[in-house]
Length: 239
Image (tube, rainbow, N blue to C red; front, top):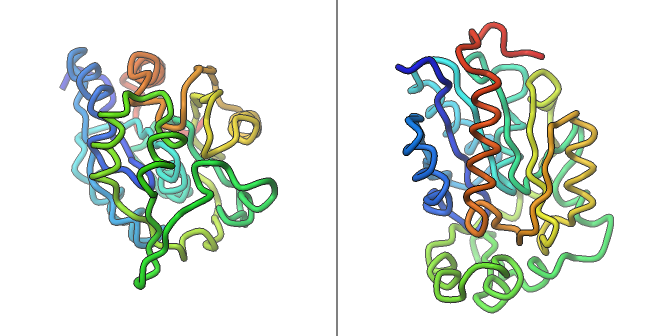
């Protein structure tokens, strides 16, 4: 133990833990203990249960960073996250009590990255390759983007109608990376999330997968949060 928080990274829909590889490399190089697990994306409850499973393995205070729907997972920890000392949103959903992803997304035009999702017979939604490469991961090398597409995990469509309970960001300090070229979550929606949670925010000219195309900025924001919370007893995590 080096006295600094552990880092847990939460992937979103149409991704897996490997999307954090560049960030993991940078954090590990600076001596951080990092975990980037896989999430089932079958329901918010199932995904929160996986996050709690991983958090229970952490030895000491922990920073959680989530991308896209990963923000929903960590937000849904609510007030029961005893060893979590901070939340970092990377182009991620930061819903409030009673809100749902579907209702939020229906407030405006369908973002380009979400226009042509394919729903299978089991009710899971998949990203077509063209939309993934051109819109979801627009600033990633197309060869790499196609690899990312090939390892995507689909998300259960039912998740979009699930209402958020008391959000974890109301009792934990938060940081937010706003991706200004995002074609999945509108940048103005990200600014709204960051503003109402009182997050320390930065803006990066990135597509939705900012942690892939701008791993330096994403890793630095996580390190900034971790340094702010260094050696903070878990019982003092609330702001």
